[in-house]
Length: 105
Image (tube, rainbow, N blue to C red; front, top):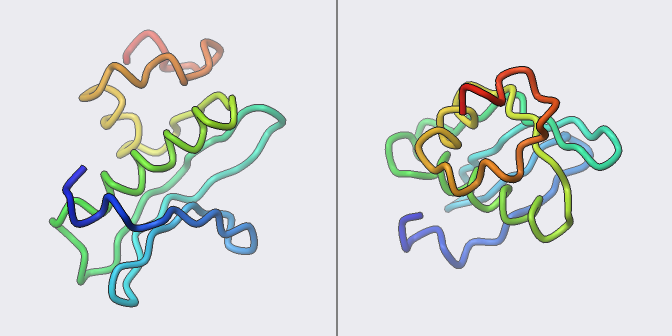
């Protein structure tokens, strides 16, 4: 994660069903669904002002730390999150082994 994002808090926005970070009134977020002890991440997006700056990776990494700290399993349906796990296999242990694409990670 780029140093600019390290101190920015992750917000679990329950109303919008997304994990988000705010940078100068601009958001990067990943939408989620909760299924007991599993969290499905389904879409990751950044506002245009944050594109290409590492904000999407930061929100995903912060979300993975949240899952880790709360003993939750990940269902990475979002292509960006799936690719992030492929690039950072140290996070694969969070992925539910029941996830259909588990063997491709």
